Length: 339
Image 1: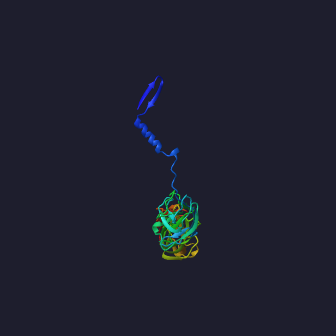
Image 2: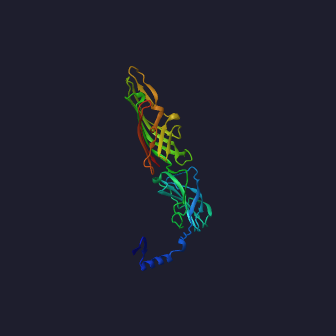
Image 3: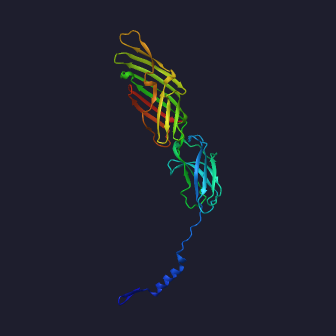
């Protein structure tokens, strides 16, 4: 390449070989700069989905669930979609990891054609183990694994349901223990301990994340000993009290979405009691009274507020130890396990 100048006028002179290459490039390019047309591809999208069963949106761990879902899937692409499969998923987050639910077959869909259908649990869906206890985000996705359809967009296949779905335990069993100093007398000690069972009662709402368990059984051993500041001695027990059946005020509440819990257990109106003998100085005749003396006859009471559960998934134990000072010092200890 060289530049020549005549007076004040300049021009560029290209070598002959370079001129030829430019001409070939112009001849090879499409006329008018026309763009290549994109390839026609299908695009499967779940436009709507519902969980038809269970309506209360939960399943028990270690028990094979019956799940029914329905959906409407549309081919939003420009080419026919070959037959595919939709599946119901439970995600620990919106991005997974996922538990696999039932599926349904979707027929061939022409461009802009829709298909409605439902899927239901079959023998291939196994029970979810205790490790899967927790609250999940449900969704229904088109063209699930193994993927069969090459799509224009592979990231718009899923429809996310608004309400959660939980995998929960049917029963909580374990031990409760306690110590109290009735009447704020540090010299008197009342103790109790034993076994309790809480059984699933009902969901708190249809949100799929809150549940009540009722007290089914409690076998408790009570005793009391010591003397008060006036020199009166207290003695009683050990006495075994057996409570069977629901008792108002005895309930375990579980929220799987946070997750958190609260628990209470009381003899309440059961009429169960044991005999306490009281000897006071200068009184030759001992008196008796019914025990337990503890406030409201509670044998289990979790701390007020949020009793958080960790880990968020797969939790199988609820443990606690705290002291209430509402009327007099009462220490509650409990250790419950999923069964």
